[in-house]
Length: 381
Image (cartoon, rainbow, N blue to C red; front, side, top):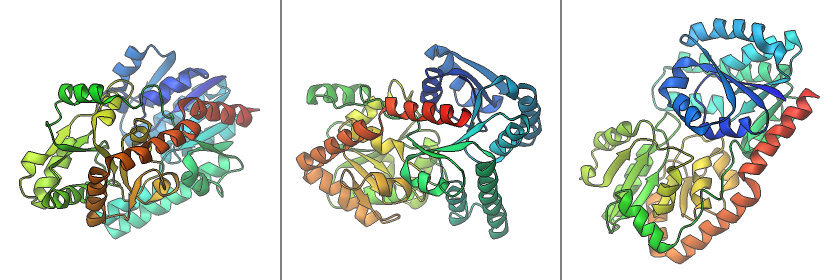
């Protein structure tokens, strides 16, 4: 199939590479996002067969220029895969309907819930929050109705999408490459910790998430401080875009001696180095105010690394029994979960390995792109 992957924002190199393997792929994306995210360099390095059409301009310019682009090119594709269900997908589904080109939406986040987190954090006022959340909810209804189907990341978003479109396919985003994200022997793990400059002899909590409005770094930091007060010699490491914000958050909270135990590092290549951090950590944590899918905990579990996560969104459905789940915002419960992992290393490891079995059977990379291919083929038939 000739497929246009129509992006309004940032996208994962793993997703683009996987798409390039199942179709004749063209990707349209704002030039700003293509270049500032490092995606352009990663695509060139990957050797993936994909044509990239950058669209110039900021948000407003992207809106009208993307309409012109779609009007000019859409008829040359068998089907469009459009990212999320917001402004860009409004353009894609409207033009697709007019030109009779099927448009499949990929829902990877929970848009209204994610934006509401800005309101919770006081980043927007009540009126703007109401207007934005109303627009997002309306956009989801309109794009869902105009689309040929929706592919979701996991069951939580599947339930959210079910009333919005004729066809809803449960997907798994880029899936988990279990040959890359796999357990390592103790000797190799020790070498990794040394090479990655993990503090020797200390309990390393990995928070591998970009710091954004829907994430909850405050609870992770407070929980680590509490665990340290109870005798756990822990450090917490944020790996991702905005790691400086994570360090600043610790300072803003006034956590004692945080310069010694709060570490931030830039994001690493998800197809090369990320697995090593997962393999080397003592525990991975995902704290969120809202979460559509939650891929990072699944990657850690695939490495046999214990996971602590908040019981919200997709994680509340996929992680019971294979991770330590705590109520959102409960730093004391999270600290206790860290201590449980430290005191019960064998049980924590066995729990994580059960998680690896689940990931392999449900969230494998092969299954993820098979699901997308089936959705595109059925929707374009």
